Amino acid sequence: MRFAAYMLAFASAAGAIAQDAARPLTVNELVTEALHANPEILAAQKRYEAARQRPAQERALPDPTLSLGWNASGNPLPGAGLGVDPTSNIGGMATQEIPYPGKLRLRAEVAAREADAEAHQYRTVELSVIARVKAAFYRLQHAYAMGDVLASNQDVLRTLLRVTEARYSVGKTAQADVFRAQTQLTLIETRLAQIDRERRSRAAELNALLNHAPTAPVARPSDPHIMPVMFTLDDLLAAAARRAPVLARDQKMIERAETALSLARKDYYPDFAVNGGYYYMGSMRPMYMFRADIKLPIRLGKTHAEVAERTQQVSEAKHSYEATARDLEYRIQDDFAAAETAHKLLELYSKTVMPQARLAVESSLSAYQTGGIDFASVLANQVAVFDYEMNYHEQMQEYHLAVTRLEEMTGMELTK
Image: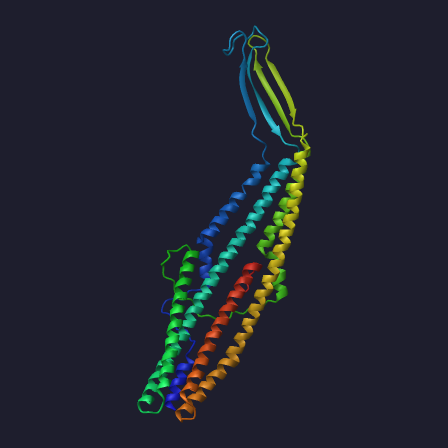
């Protein structure tokens, strides 16, 4: 029975995660750092800040034009004929273009809607980077957890292999049992190699997202756990309709297209230019000149085409919004189902499957000691516990990733 108790101690330890001496890495500190250091976020922020400067530019009148010159009589030199010939003068004229009333306001509104859309795009980039940081963190976290499960089961199988070799040496078991245990150990070694690659890949991904050096060390994440969440599918869909930045961006693009259509219709009306000049006439009285120019919008075919183009762009923006909304609803439902299913499986594994599997290992170990069952049954039961523990962590990872995607799509923080 001492052997059975020894084996059970190893089996019950499978899946436990050893604590590092260093402080464990948390997802919140990674997200905070990414928001301040990620190049994609910084680039999106600068695009938004640049877009905010455009409305003031579009609202301003065109720069005036100043014309300086002279009219000379008798020779081309300035001042020739001044005071003698009434056609000789030196002076200048200023011209100010004035768009038809409402055009500047509409141009500024178009730029403002574009800036608003850029603000929502900035938020979209933030959420995307946050989701990628969290996904990399959870994959790294579960790589460590599954590595611990593998290492623990490796220790159990090595102990079992030593016992089997001892029994084989005295003729109490077949050589095939030794081979079975060795084969299972080799399989675990291959899985450990894959887990090690996953750790290195996820560490490199985090370094890239945080703008660190590619080989910068990444601390071991905190222990994985199921975070309490209180949401329903209806809650998520309603939150996405209110807060999803991709929908808000598309809504601003609809408003931008409608404003651009109103601006295009203004081209049916004329723009103006106001001119004023002063001319020095020498001993003669100075001459003043004022003039108003009207730009005649007689190329109606061009304006009709522009209005038709803008009308189609409004329709396009509305259809794009609907397409984005329907795709978002589908993805939310899909990831909600994934999270819900993963959570149910975690409950089954933790409360039913794994406890029953460990009881089966305990029973088979006792029977193996008395010769009631063969080694293959003991090994099969132990391998089953190992598989269930691995499946448990895979489902926990799937749950974390599904919740992360839901946070990205809804713009909500669903877990603390």
